[in-house]
Amino acid sequence: MLQLIKSIKGDKAIWAVVALLAIFSFLPVYSASSNLVYVVGNGTTTGHLLKHGLLLVLGFGIIYGVHRIPTHFFKGLSLIAMPILLVLLVFTLAQGTTIGGANASRWIRLPLVGITFQTSNLASVVLMIYIARYLTKIKDRVPTFKESILPLWLPVFLVIILILPANFSTAAIIFSMVLLLCFLGGYPIKYLIAIVGTGLLCLTLFVLIAKAAPDLFQNRVDTWEKRFTNFFSVADSDSDADYQIEKAKIAIASGGMFGKGAGKSVQKNFLPQSSSDFIYAIIVEEYGLVGGIVLLLFYLLLLFRIVVVANGNPTVFGKLLVLGVGLPIVFQALINMAVAVELFPVTGQTLPLISSGGTSSWMICLAIGIILSASIKENEKEGQRMNIDESNPLEVLSGQL
Image 1 (cartoon, helix red, strand yellow):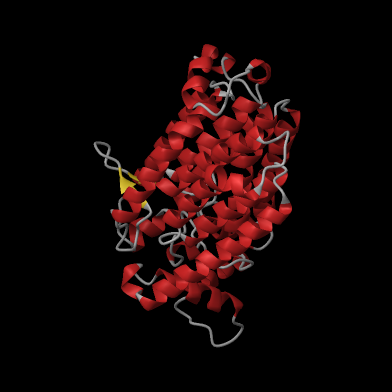
Image 2: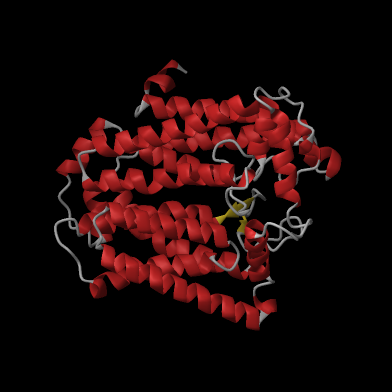
């Protein structure tokens, strides 16, 4: 055990924040899982807690394993992972697993182990690494828009198009993070404006096609439309559609300053997705405004350390890599909290490292492992010594081996 602790490297503050969030998550998950047990009739609270613990243990195993990989290895790995990712997304869209009777062309069931896996979470990490690599290649020159279409924007739009029909919120978040990373990486703003226009045009065409053939996408567009309409409407809102938000606001309002206490939430028995999408409302109900603010500060501390690690990395790829995989974690957390307090339409995004989000937590752990890898000084120095033609993935891998 001591040897294992000594082998842990990287930013200690990030390790501490991640560990504290994971440890704290057991309390709200155990409390909120009673909704699944006594209302839905799904398993036992102990069973849900053990499952959550197992996922986190495996997640920390991913963090430990990935953080030992030198940062420059991810350049070549992204080139190999991108075509595999596209195949997985196509397979997921064509043969998605139904979860709880809902349209779930977001998951595939892993053979042998029998658990479901949401490929869009993997897509976010792989795509960000791929883009960081491309932006590193063009760091010393300004590319033309035409020459960046195939190597940069074609993979981006393929990933977005394959995710969009089943998960609009995730597609929108990934697209936003791609634009932000490209902006931070020095990609010309005028080209980004053109990409935003192209994206809006593609979204419009998709909505028109879905409206013309509603059975093709199982009324997903109607769901998006209802959520936005309910969010912006002040009166005459659909009570059924607003049920989750109303219960979340009741939970937050009843929490007061210091909350009702651990496990004493009432709204967890009425609020759907109380252990995942709306777990922040349960946290505020049980731990009050103070608990909600402290949790927010932990994510902001994580954001601060991500920026510190990125700023301290001497390589362009390391800086962009950390920002690319790190910013979406905090952004997702802020969106989850904003949805609970009705500052944002319902999106279905979980609270990173807290929600019982299943295999999605593994992708968060993968991203954290990459960030910690970039924070290790020995890896940074090795990355600076690497002088390989990055346009050839076989040469990259051979040089790294």
